[in-house]
Image 1 (cartoon, rainbow, N blue to C red):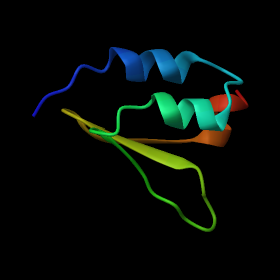
Image 2: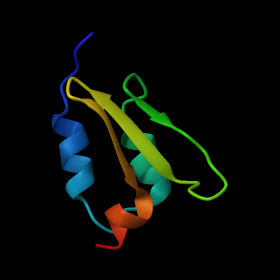
Image 3: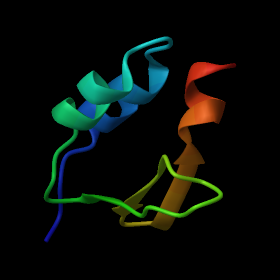
Image 4: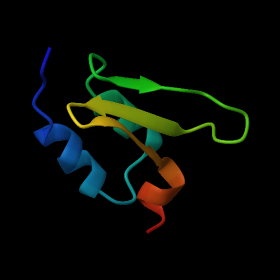
Length: 62
């Protein structure tokens, strides 16, 4: 099953957005949040090229 990723790319370009809002806007069909003790807010997005991952700290603090 293929998905359109325009919303994903758009959200990743947004800086300083609240964590709640970011999680709320993500499409649950292709996004899964893996909770870890050391990296509690790491989100992995799976697309046709494989599995992409980025920490929230990298997204919002750059």
